[in-house]
Every structure is written in structure tokens, then in C-alpha cells.
Length: 205
Image 1 (spheres, rainbow, N blue to C red):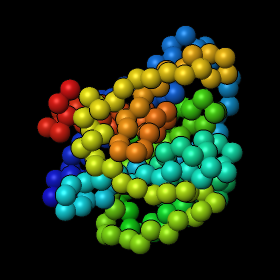
Image 2: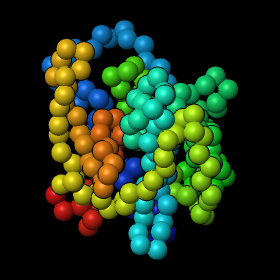
Image 3: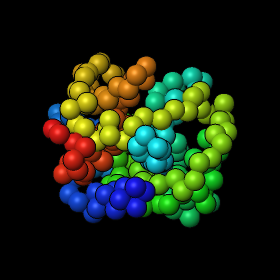
Image 4: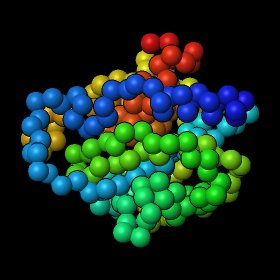
């Protein structure tokens, strides 16, 4: 099972996919060419359970400066001491949820995602090798939970919604799961993964 899942995910990383950005659905926005984006990275950790593969997500602490209380992947800024974005994503996942870097089978990265808050986020796709005991950094994370991978591979589960932000109407993807409202950059990166796995039989759109 895990081998089949790994092969499917590797194939998805090599396949074509639409660009991923917070501005995908907001084409009227004109971005300055000389803008400086801060490098960041997130880990998309997938764990194979007896009832199917799941993605581990977090609900950010309400006290954080950026995106408080929102659903997100483990991750954060790429620091000067990080070897690269993958190292940053693994470090942040260890700090936030207790996932050891050595417990990751890193498969590769999706194209960088630009956020409206000025970050260029590199999504790192990983298969967790073994189960682990979650250790939550309460200063960063309010909650850790899992959603079925099949749920986010079915693009019919995504909707486009909008709200006013800084005086403008902003459109974004959402992919709710139970009590969790997954939207914005996290939902867009999940949609990018679903695009790349669109030929998988879990996607019927």
C-alpha cells in the first residue's frame, strides 16, 4: 500500500500542474516586478493509516502575527542556518508537532506559492515512515489533526469563496473537512496537488 502511494505521489510531482499563488483567482491584481518575497517552506506530511492515507494539518495558535487561528501545514520562514527549504520545513515540523526529520521520506517539492503576506512558500511533500507521538508547541500550534488524502484529491470538494481584504474583493479556494475550515494558501496548495493527481481514480471531477 505504502509503495503504491509513494509511486503515485512521485508521479504527481513530475506531472503538469497549474501555477499556485494567492493571486490565481484574483487576476486583476497587478504585482510589482521588483517585489521582494520572504522565503518560507511548509511540509505536506502524509501518513498511511489502515483506513487510508491522511494529511497532517495544524490549527495555528491565535496569538501568532501571521494567519492566527487558521489551518496550515507545519512550516515557517527559511532561516539563514537552514540548508534549504526542505531543511526548514523538516525543522519546523519537528518544532511544531514533534515529527522527527529522520521519520520523513521526502519525495520532492511543488512549485513555490506566493502569498498575499509577502512570502514565497515552497511546499515539501513527505511520506511519514512510522507513527510518532505528537508533541505540540503551544506557542505556534493550537491543534493537530488529520484529513483523508482522498478528500483533497477530489476537486469537487473545493469551492471558491470571497471576502473583502484591504478594501478589495479577494477570491480563494476552500476545502472544508468536518469542523475545520481549510482555505487560502493551504487550500490552494492542496488544490495544486489534486491537479497533479487528476488522473488518479480518487479524483472524479
